[in-house]
Image 1 (tube, rainbow, N blue to C red):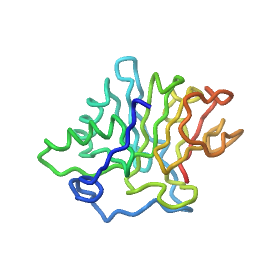
Image 2 (image 1 turned 90 degrees about the vertical axis):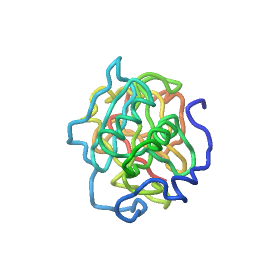
Image 3 (image 1 turned 120 degrees about the vertical axis):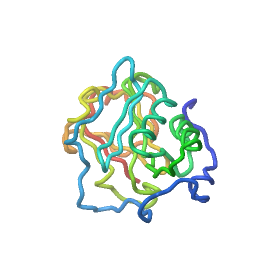
Image 4 (image 1 turned 180 degrees about the horizontal axis):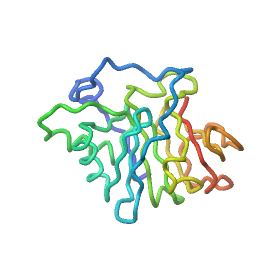
Length: 205
């Protein structure tokens, strides 16, 4: 896939190039906290089709390109978007933006990405979490769950998905994990029978 390539993120993960605030902890199965899908989320537009949401905080932003989105996330939230192994265009752009930043940013870790069209096209949203190394442990993560009530443009409007390894993604037809489901799936260019159906999702391993 053109949007992702395997890279070493030694400067981020091992070298401590970016600040991480409080000591990093992995996502914990069975956490009683629930994703904040009740917050006001920035919606994509034809001019600003690339979007991002940090699931556990509800922070969000949209921009015209991955580079502009990375810079906006840095400027508005002092966050750099990182991954634990597989890079995306957004993590690459975010790393470049952070290098010239005078203040050491905190990290937000990618869970995966969804698109409104098949073959990773159209409106997109990258989901991340403030917890380091998401999906490092097996289990379902309640703080990696999102219901699309707050992102109405993507409600019943997802056609391709790409969870970031080792995460997998599960989609449901209704909000709050209701209705039919895909089960856990990996990167999928065409959701076929589940195209334009999903109203909630969860990242897990």
